[in-house]
Length: 272
Image (tube, rainbow, N blue to C red):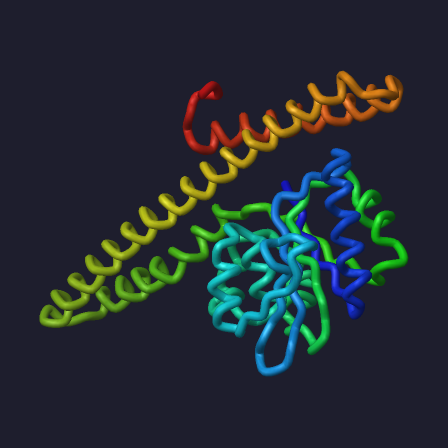
């Protein structure tokens, strides 16, 4: 799965240089940069955002509310982590139960940014942390990192557990109820069962939607890697090209295995 990284800075020049280096790693095929945002905390709950996610168009200022709407456009864990880090997304802590983030990571990113802090928040795929860590050496003293793996089954279980406990409580009451009370309790149990059924259907639909999105992203990554692989056939240095092509082949194989697992999770045939 992809990793989410948060890299804080106090110096704008270093932050932009670091973003250049991360993009270079992506261009070289050492990592895959899926999405990113650079933000800077200002006073009065305002934030600067590097315009259009580029480092050549300058900064644009958003209020906390406006920033919340902007980061809502980032699907999945990236938007969630930007929300946790800036404190601009209502319910972000609840949403984090969908993902397998380490406690230490959540604690770090959920602290609101101090005024003047600049942060790169990015979703990347990396074979090793060495590439990013070495590239940013001397620019930032801290890289907060966590895997962005979905844990949707546990999420579903947690969501329906409360309803199931309520049903069990009502059943216990039913055993001791008078004839007059039983009708009301049975009606409540029926209502809770209906809510449980509806909740499972809702969460299953969300799970399917999330898996399909990941499947499509995985297919796009494979296509991107294969395109890069073709491009390296005409590389000037044969030995350098061969080493990079072998690394890309391994990444393509990993993505294809992931795609196969996603097909299985969605109950689909392995060939579209």
